[in-house]
Amino acid sequence: MSSEEERQARHLYIAKDPEDLVRCIAGQKNPKVVMWNMSVSGKEVKQIANEILITNSIKEFYSAHTRLGVNFDPIAKMLRKNTSIQVLNLKYDELPSSDMKNLANAMLVNTSVRRLLLRNNHAQLGGAKAFAGVLKQNCVITRLNLSANELTDEGGVLIADSLKFNSTLRRLYLRENRFSDPVAVAFANSLTKNVALELLDLETNIIGGDGATALARMIRTRNINNSSLTEMNLRGNLVSPEGATLLIEALAHSNSFRYLHLFENPFGNNIKDMLADVHRAKAAVFKETQALRLEDLTLNLASGNVGPWNRSKIMLVGEGRTGKSATVRSLLNQSFDANLESTVGVSLSHANAHVSGWRKSKLKNVTLEFLAHQVVEVREDHSLKKEEGEEDDLEAGRKGNDLIENPDISTPRTDNENGEVEFNEADLLDPNYIPFDEAGESRKIRVPKAEEDVWEKHNISREQAGKIIENAGKDKGLSFTLWDLGGQEVFYSLHHIFLTNHSIYLVLFNMVSMLRNTSSSLRYVKFWLDAINLHAPEAPVLLLGSHADKIRKKSSKKKINKVLLNLIGPTSSTIFNAED
Image (cartoon, rainbow, N blue to C red; front, side, top):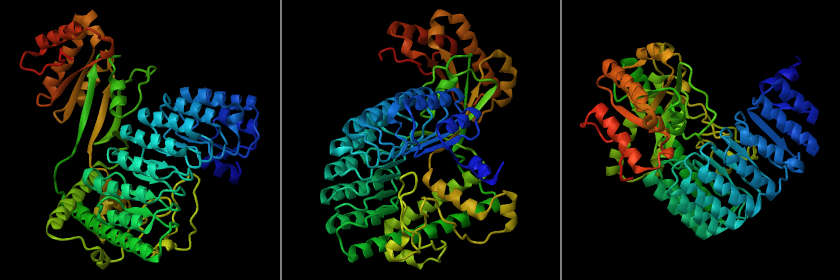
């Protein structure tokens, strides 16, 4: 394999022509494939879609300047069934509104695409309506780019309103759609209710004073209610000096909001200086807080301090095919999969619980993540007590040591491949205040020196610890490990090993089976209740009935409730409210 082939195998496979792309997909050479400036026929589009569906191994699919609109229907049909593609990038493909609506309809049932990047197509109002519907229902997409799609103000308002019902989207890019004040006002209203969005990019629209005023009010309100939104890009709009001042004041008073991009708006250098001062002060506070947290973390690691664990195991047990795996998917905000196979043995998932819902996560270093959450909570409690007796002083943030490496101020501002905000730090006059690089990732942080054996013992560098601390500041929810125990009886002897008091138990049963085969269903429920009582007598237990949508009559629910009460005794809580 040549060096170029090795590079592509590690990164992206850029196909030479449609036949080359089909061969790559069929041979599963690379899970990330690119069609760039390629002429394709309707037949070739169908071949590509069929091969992706057959192999079901492609993780990232990029198509730019390819004009898949020549025959987009096979792509949409493939996306309805495909479960492997996580990144779908169709920028500059000139897809018409009808194809964009077709794509949106596919996203209503797709369960894998997390990043949907559609810059420079022609969604227009029809596509905006369709994607607003997607945001109300889809529980998977975390990043959406609809920049330069001729969405119109009406379409922008619809997308904004849909965020009231969305709990998974983190980053939304809507540049160059000629949105005016009504769209900004709509976003301001919806984002007071949304608790998931972290970045809103409205660059190069025509938002003016009314929109800026509404957004400033929203930033102040969110500071009280929640802290997910941390960045907003209003560069290249029509924000007046008065509107910019309100936004900057809101930024200054917000504990969570970090970045406000306002350049190329009609105001003078005095506003730019004000924005630079606020950013600089917030960065100084960020640096000082990070340093103190890392110092606390080092001490806790060395001394072995204890505190609230803030995590638990949730054990899902019960007869096979009662819906344990489907319940796990539901808890993780994943859509229902009718073709889900039975669990073999034990399946583990990790999740964080937030106000916006549960999110699937990866468990890495439990001890370190636990201690990181502790130091974040202690520092925040100290800060809150301090704020009660002192007024905000933006200049005070400048007194700390320079703990953040200076960014390269010569870096030009460009749009990256995903349409994300890339920012020229020199625009803000002082290179020292930006703690994030162009891709939005934290820069390396110089941390206080600690005993080397502490870090070696936990096999982690100070830079990694700094990143964990930062994530702990964002993620303040409870953590869970979901244990999906296979329901086949052959695994029962194995499952007893995992039953401990330090768990929450969900004993699942099929409500339909409980009516039709009462004795058999009760036998499984009783088996698990006895097993839990033997191995974990102090643990909380919840009985959970599945297939409730198939139980229409209240009398049937009453019957199930009576059967369960006879089993567990009248002192236990009622499972069903028969009046519902």
